[in-house]
Length: 302
DNA sequence: AATCGCCACAACCGCCATACA
DNA sequence: CTGTATGGCGGTTGTGGCGAT
Image (tube, rainbow, N blue to C red; front, top):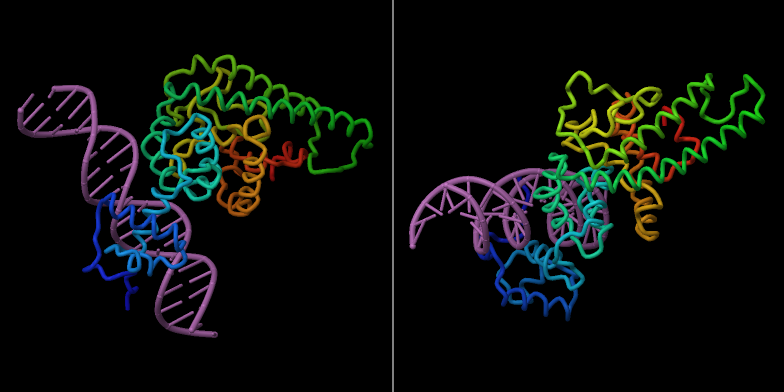
């Protein structure tokens, strides 16, 4: 036995809503609220399915909705969150006041997806993202260097404290320096982003979390787009996962909400992010970069 | 002026989770 | 505990506007 339809298909109107219908629905909801969508169309004098009414209200009629174009900041937020939570449009929309999941979904499908697959056109996005990311990374790296030096000074040789336990001091320094170098180059060259270069080309070397040679997708030639994992998992550009990840980019309130999301989805993120574990992209790991305990940054397996 | 194709947005569909009797 | 109703979500489709030919 199949599922019972939410309403009788014969007696319900479908298709575009008229201004009259909008008025009926709006005025009814303003008086009675949205307690029972099944009853709303009946009581409001609408020949519509309750589900259709709910959609119309939540996606269009709600007074707190924005109807204009998406701002750059909103776009960055979408890109950033999409790279983390995927097509969880309601989650993403929850971070954008006045925007609905449908809005976000449509905007992604019609604009952002294309933008992200056309790198020269999104140089500014990449640049903005790198700006945010650079600040965050340099902050963390600076802190990490200090922590590490302190740790080296205090911890006797051979003892293992914390999760970060490389054996070779030069390797650690090299990692940090490589990341810094890559970031600097990326920033410098973000205006000169090269034409799209497929990542399956042989010189698109795999990044790895040990990161001694390829801390940045750009390898030695500067920022390159998209990164090695591009094309996996619904064409999510993983470089964007590092967009504006820290305090430098998102507002305090949103930042908190974002952290909630990340905490809420931490398990599935780490579950879904298998590429991250096999080192496909260093940037995939920033699901833990977000609110990371600093030690985790340098821990290859998080 | 007519037609075609593309784009953006609105709406629908089906599935899933949860509340509730 | 179980079955059903309902709300919510993501994917997909429909439709109108607009520019190119």
